[in-house]
Length: 335
Ligand SMILES: NC(=O)c1ccc[n+]([C@@H]2O[C@H](COP(=O)([O-])OP(=O)(O)OC[C@H]3O[C@@H](n4cnc5c(N)ncnc54)[C@H](OP(=O)(O)O)[C@@H]3O)[C@@H](O)[C@H]2O)c1
Image (cartoon, rainbow, N blue to C red; front, side, top):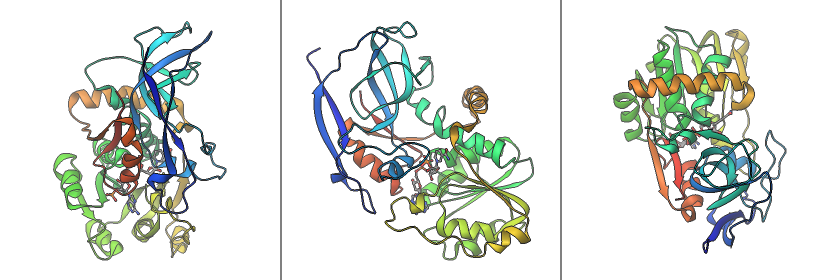
């Protein structure tokens, strides 16, 4: 093929904030495939907050990245060689592959997707893991119902933007917060949130939520943790539910933060808090994909991406996403 395979490996583990030097770009040979394997030309890859936790040497629901090994990501790519009867050349697949131009795979965990009217990168966002997370959290974990007040943090991001829109489709009242005025405008004017605020400039987050949610919050979709989660907790209604999805405020901290103050509210208001992981209920995820395709076609679900161009820009895109520089889902275009 005459081309080289650019790859990005974990160079060192971050202590606190992830830095560009924690990554290293190397180049190798395009891998040869054997019986049962396929070669994928990677087109788009996703950078996601959970990757920061995988950079630590700590036990979690996914194993840590290894120093010197190619990093993994959700990838959409095209099969260019196949010795696996389940895939043929030209198929488009989505699944966990490497931060690299070409990946070899035995096909396990890869799904074929159709080339259609929707951009292929959507399978890493609104039609992929973040969208499924939004739906599973609202339906399975929080049991959101029409008429209820739903609050979502990191509301303009990949998961949060879908949470808010699905909650509106379900007939809920939706309030969210994000880290810039542009993002807040986007939530209200483009995504149809009822109310939203900039948590960086609002002053007291708890008082702002109390003003914007005078009846209190029935369902909290927690993406952030820390100060925002504490402020939401204090504004929950009796029998409210909190779907604990992510704690991004803590991911780059060298030391763990103390928990929210005022946890006695959980008892007083008879709250339910439940953490969840997107792949807990695969049937729910498939149900979501069917619905999301229709909602996208009908214009009920809007979707925004920030696309970094080139594999070499993946580390910067990843760090930028953790700092809130992304608008909607952060994607990296590889080819
Ligand atoms: N449980 C699961 O299975 C699952 C699956 C997917 C994602 N998640 C979690 O869901 C959350 C959102 O993920 P995503 O993929 O949709 O990312 P995202 O929202 O597209 O991007 C991350 C956003 O988090 C916000 N943020 C970063 N640091 C913050 C802080 N200290 N306080 C408040 N906001 C902060 C930034 O937006 P602002 O500009 O608004 O600050 C940033 O753009 C993450 O916590 C992630 O770990 C969980």
